[in-house]
Every structure is written in C-alpha cells, then in structure tokens.
Length: 93
Image (tube, rainbow, N blue to C red; front, side, top):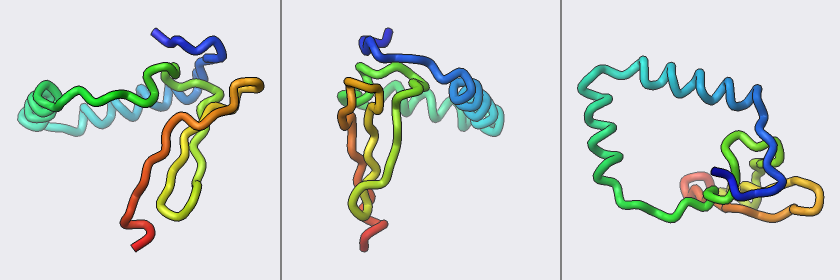
C-alpha cells in the first residue's frame, strides 16, 4: 500500500494504464505469456524507486532533465522532490 500522505489516485490515468496492460497481455501468445512470467519469476528483486509512491498518483510528474535524462518527481504542494532519474545514453550519443 502507498506510504505517501499526499497520494491521490488519478482515475483517468489508472483506467488508461489498466486498459493498456490488458491490451498488451491480450496481444501475446500463450507461449509469450509463459516466457514473460518465467522471466519475471527469475528476475532479481531490485529496489523500487517508486515504492513509497502510489500507482497513478495525480502528483507524480515526468519531465525531461539534461539530455538523455527523464526525471520523475512529486509535485504535491509542500512535498516537491525528485523521486527517480532515468538515463538513456542513446539519446545523447
């Protein structure tokens, strides 16, 4: 469950995310689904930078930082902070 006291679910985003996930799984063959599930079961558990945030939060924003950088941050008044930064080297090479 979400630990953030600023969490507010964005119902539109959540509905769209659920529809996209359902369409993705529906587009896969049974063998592809089994392979994906086996891969997920074997994948090492990595720390989740979004663990304290709730899924589809109204305050979670994604913006561009420096070239190759995607910055995820909380924009709730009084709780503004960077949550995670992804780097994509192929965008700057």
